[in-house]
Picture 1 (cartoon, helix red, strand yellow):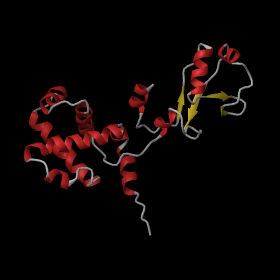
Picture 2 (cartoon, one colour; picture 1 turned 180 degrees about the vertical axis):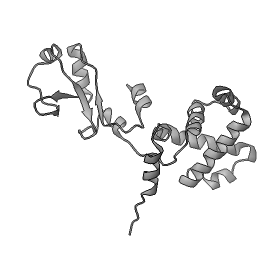
Picture 3 (cartoon, helix red, strand yellow; picture 1 turned 60 degrees about the horizontal axis):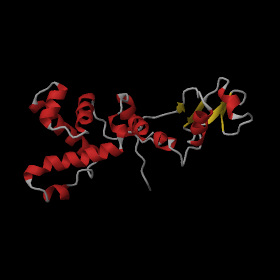
Picture 4 (cartoon, one colour; picture 1 turned 90 degrees about the vertical axis):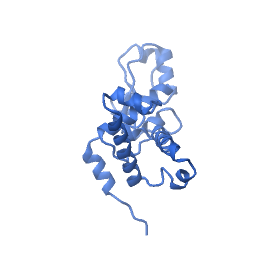
Length: 190
């Protein structure tokens, strides 16, 4: 379950529908982990059951959950916990960052992406500029001054990749117009 959540976090989910349950045990598990039964008469998901689980399993049924349902406290909450991306990486930057997450070196990244080492370094520079423009505090200047010159790039990368592991929405595909709209809308406190 944790692998499923890790792979699917960061998307703007509206609804999650489970496959048809083939056993009472499977249906019971889905319901105990936050799933709800679709009530076609009420046209909504419900947690109240008027039939036995064995009867439900033997007939067509739908188990699912939506963003509007009360998912707090169950595993589905991690899937529905969405924050719009703020960094706005382009496709080549997302590709490089996705490959770098497991810990690939620049040389490995160049081979994986089919590009040159200077192109990889240029993309990293572009990524760091974008991060500094959008989230200036992410890679703290004070932290960089304490690190020898040769280790600054590694430390910047370490901080950025740690952030991306906690914010997978930054690497998910979204339309450019969506990102531009959300970065233009600012809320000012009085």
